[in-house]
Length: 601
Image 1 (tube, rainbow, N blue to C red):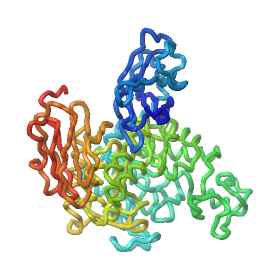
Image 2: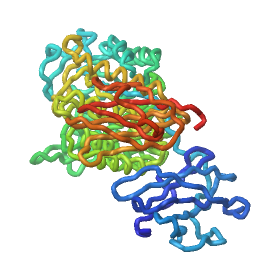
Image 3: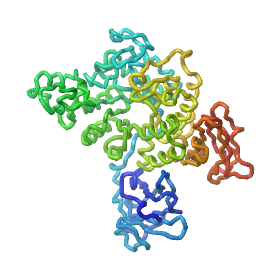
């Protein structure tokens, strides 16, 4: 047993309160190095009467490590614990305590790890509705023009070539007019990129945080839209650009005019007065050196008061269901802690989503965000299904590492996207292979967390990066990919129908192999419900022989399959109830449901 590979530390993703009664414990070991792991747990003040050994299950694996997990309900909401690890040979074992490794379990638990107390206020509880949501991202200027009378004077004909500066007249009335399409797709949550008054087509240069841009409509029109969405069971998320404003933001205009004497001088991070640009670099902090996006000083009490009122107003007065926070990692943590308190006081079920592209543990402790945009997930899915730069084994390892990186609550609320207004479109990333795109989307829609579909993906829209990924939505049926649209409807409906596809339980039962770098199979479970998804993400047919966890299975029924695949191509191997043979044509999938003889197993 390689002791150097074994790792645990209290709190974060390793030891945390899952709810107000339950503690989750995790430990890392070298891959395939341990036959079993147990947690030795008890109450520190009543050790002798509460001590017990609890088996740990394999949560996930990556290239180097196995990650083990168990749930414990301590009698007094606190815990002392150690780990007993048995080597792969089944004989050698070792005890891990906070002080290190010992051969025998100490009589006194003072050297053990400590979980002091489950304080209810510290339990991270994202909104329950989020794990059941399927989001749809809308770039408002390009979705639908429902009221030409408010379009910009220089509006261009719908469907023209997008540029960084042109306008096509998309507005809120256009969204209202197309809610049938959104609802029929199976969407129950919408994320809008910024709606507030600004000079650009993307609106990330806010001029007035309290006013809907006139080219989109009015505050009253947004309230009408929110109410129409709620009537259909659709939640609404707005984009908050609190890291920076626009150069037409009145406090910045005043600071430009009056310099250091401006009462707003401390609203921004100024290195040198006056405010100007020298050799392409502003004398003030900005987003990405963009002179028209000055960075706000979120430590300033007046700035905080203003932005907190913005956060409160749109939830309380307009009825939105949460905020997506732009460039969230460049804003100080204390601001977000106070922001969360304001938002949750108005609506405890509001969803707070941060835009962070990398490891985000420090924002996901329950005091700041409910979730972040899960770009590590995005990258792994695209590497396997779109770019094809990694094989199935490497993909399963990447996913396994991500599952172990965060608490279960974080995984269940994670915002899982495959493309957006910031990236090339999924179909383009898949080199216009719609079948490969379906596989990526199917994995997204059968994975724990909250999937988000970028507007137009469902009808086959393509596009390279900005501005090409911001084309006008295709509304003419004859120009839409009807087959792709039907796929999305069926895949989303499947996710809504089966709780297993929204659960946290995911187990890879096959990830590639000799000559099968693109084959993948994984199980999703929730109670007695057991589903199996098998995929072939490459251009050659494959035949899988899967060995599954033994269960008295009567049969496997097909719930969903790609063209050319059917239940006759996925069958139990005769006489072997834990073995399954599946034929997979190129770029194909099949979703199966276990029909058990005894539902209690």
